[in-house]
Image (cartoon, rainbow, N blue to C red; front, side, top):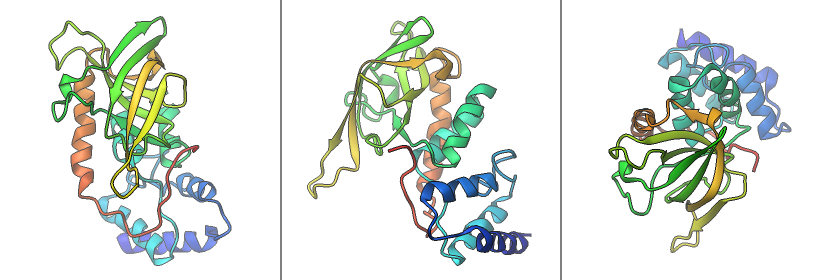
Length: 243
């Protein structure tokens, strides 16, 4: 029952929680125990129901312990990789998302495409085992601290616009990636523009088949719509990733 889960997790927190832990160390403990995203099946979670997952969050709040990593990685990249990823991609990317060791951003929107995402102009051209990506993305929150981005790019310019798009798990820390903050009137910069100039992504990091990225992106967009209404859980947050 949810009550039993909450009692168990509160007891676990009493054993494990120490204010002297770093955020990284605490997130490792949560992930090791399957409590970061407990609704996931093992080995990443515990296969919990919605009520049981809520009980985990209630236990964290009750004990004043920090919640799991959150953001683009957990809300969008994680469910999309679990739905469309190969075994190798799931092994490579899921654990660093749920333990917060790698941070993510979303590289979908473009200055000219507006709400019509399929009108994107960013190109990815095949070069051996890699793709070379050039173009511009905009409204990229957490782009300045992300290790990876979920990226859609045009891989067949001759195909109809919803076809000829591929979806990539794109490494942000490399030459050819220029992240520029969009300053607001307050001086804060929540969003960024990202300029890509012959940046590279391995073909092994392509999610789904070449030129079928629109279907993969729709999984992401479905989770984005669902996630917008989710409350933060009421506990402390930190930005995931190496930065």
